[in-house]
Length: 139
Image (tube, rainbow, N blue to C red; front, side):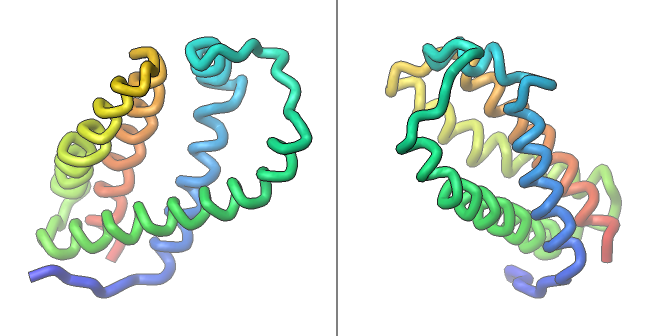
């Protein structure tokens, strides 16, 4: 049976961590240049007025997505009864492989380059495994 109990502290903390980690992942500090190059943008890309106007909505969507992914992970970790970091990390790995990776593979039909898939899934794999492990031990 699924366990929909929510512990607010890990939900809030990991949602914020996910939001910040995603921002850093796609920043010049890590993978912005190869990701932008693969999408056909140069590293001197200037935001258009439309892109600037959309930014607040993108931030709201990013925060909402962060809460949803952490909540979903929390439900799965609790429902399975993962009690150690390794068990929670394995839950995260299975969720990544079964859902994130398979959905990302379908974006190849859109003509996206493999490097975009690798960069995106690197973030998903890292965060799902990490959050699954943390949620298993943060009771």
